Image (cartoon, rainbow, N blue to C red; front, side, top):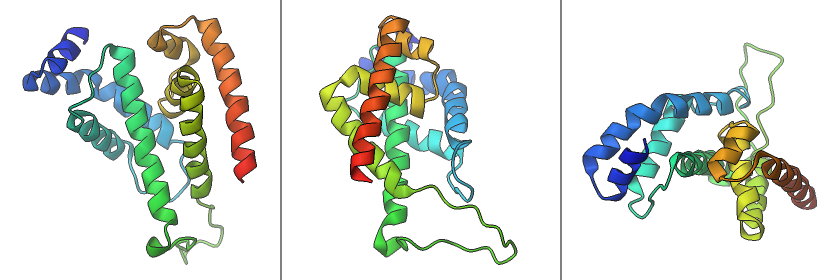
Length: 182
């Protein structure tokens, strides 16, 4: 995979075609894990999320991945941005804002996830990335990509214990920032 990433960086278009089969199942698994926690009524499927993230990753000519971890961090970031954009679009007034679809056949309707919370989380994560980029990357890899602490630490090139401390710090910092805004 590292050799293919090097070829992509060198501008070899065929290399990006070879990269997709290598990473597709891993990206699909990560997207499925993330989407499993989505609210009922979610119309975005994991496959569509992977495909849209892939198009964004390949479309960004300025992006070059140095390693497997860097690639999956970029993929997690692309997936996060897609989910945030969908949340913003759903909550926009011209798209129905606070309106919810009601299924008349069912009396007990599950509530959709709070789009405002996802937007506030995005803003807090952006602020955290300015303050502590490693902690922000760790949150993206663990929360949005679904990697366990050991794998995320390896991808970031830090000891697992350091990643554990950064995880605790980032969670507390994000909680404080989010509760201020809600």
